[in-house]
Image 1 (spheres, rainbow, N blue to C red):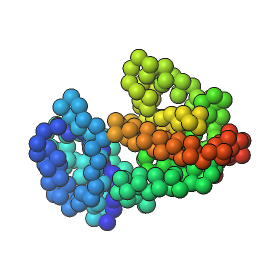
Image 2: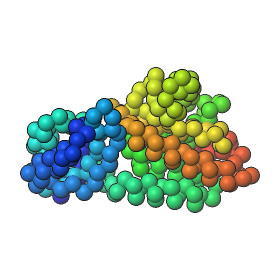
Image 3: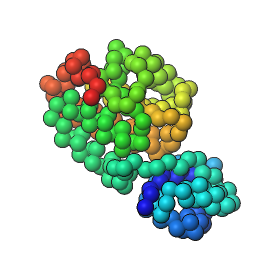
Amino acid sequence: METFVVRLWLPDRPGALGAVASRIGAVRGDVVGIDILETGGGRAIDELVVRLPRQQLAELLVNEVEQVDGVHVELVRPAAPTAQDPNLDGLETAAMLVGAVDPTELLSALCVHGGQALGAEWTAVVDCTTGQVRRASGQSPEGPWLAAFVAGSVAAAATGPAAGDATGGPDDVAWAPMPAAGLALVVGRTGTPFRARERRSVAAMARIADTRARELGPLRSRLAHPSVGHRP
């Protein structure tokens, strides 16, 4: 069996998701997970985890699903080999964060495991004052770009949406503040926007890590030590 993540737009009306599931079943697919990412304007954006007997059936699946009136497939991608239930991934990452015994372990768990749970291609923790990257995973942008992105988002949020929204910047980048540590968590990926539910997950992950940084007490000062910024 091959497992895929299917992100789609569909009318926010009774029976729409059932019609999609029926079409998936027509190509011998099995829906094993669903996440509602965003709703509004009479439409919903859902992300399904679908198992297919063969990889070659992915294109046929898209054609079948888009036969449902008002449905559009935004993307289809192979699921990560370690993919589990998204909610379980988030809980396991939270457990790692609250169990971290020092800032190095905390930031490593946030970037590596947190980034995976959030569906990011890259993750970075940047110092909001100096623009220095304290920890990163994947091919993240340089510190000055990240700091400028955060500053621009804060300025936009002052008259618009709350922090974490990429208003004024690319929608495939999301961020959240870690005020106790004086840091910001920034995540990104290529071409796939972060939807409302995903942005709330980024903010929740950052709050957990920031709370743990505060609990570490005297160790918090080590977050600013250059050695913590080394990439894995």
